[in-house]
Length: 144
Image 1 (tube, helix red, strand yellow):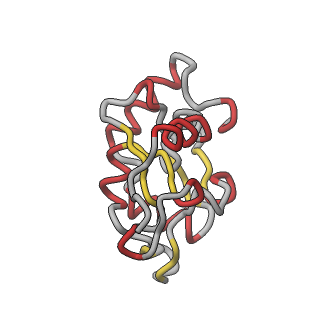
Image 2: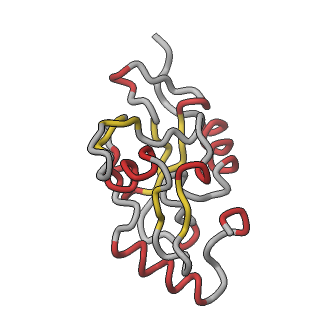
């Protein structure tokens, strides 16, 4: 049986690939009030592997809300849809920022369901985004 632990090399590659940001809520690790972790996008219990194509950099809040979920209810269509998959999908295809970059807006059923399931607009994140935007630290250039 393969070793399910994430290696130091994998961890560093995941952090670098994610530009040190949560791959779900786009919070920057350097300003986080909670720890970040490597997350299995497809949980191991559901056949997910500990390989780079199934691992994401996630803040504690997103990881806690996601837990073992892979699907969720889109609040608008009321359909069950897959959650955003950072290795297979582009964040900007499913999400956008509101005009002051404090709220993430779902632009697809996947985006809307992921926002609800992972609570991507948690009050503490919205407040942190507001302050970081005021001092020019949010969003990252790739998100503008």
